[in-house]
Image (cartoon, rainbow, N blue to C red; front, side, top):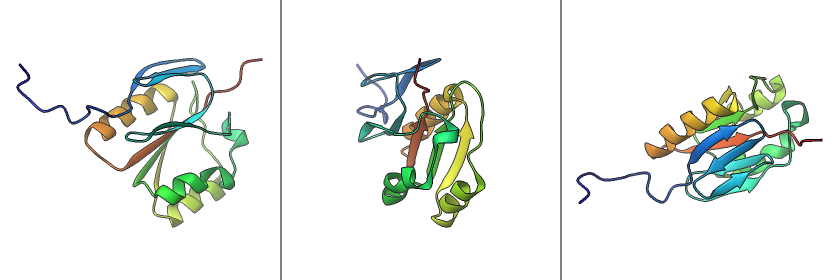
Length: 126
């Protein structure tokens, strides 16, 4: 018998993060992806912070989340000032962190029904 509500039921959440791989409740990813708690993951074209361009964020800006989490792999790396300024102008908060921290933060915010999206950058293995 369940005695409390589970607000995260039916959400796409992160179960595990490893270098080059992220395991979600809905499957494994070994390439970069954009994650929404309700809509699930979608492929993201950039593999590293150096690959990021403003054009990559049109989908994010169209959905206008309150918070965008950017997981930059195993190490913290910040995107260029132009990209950060564009997100700020669109009133989308950007939080940059490594993929493990991004997963933990995403799960908490999604569980609180916050308007959040996350990008997990996963470099392509040679």
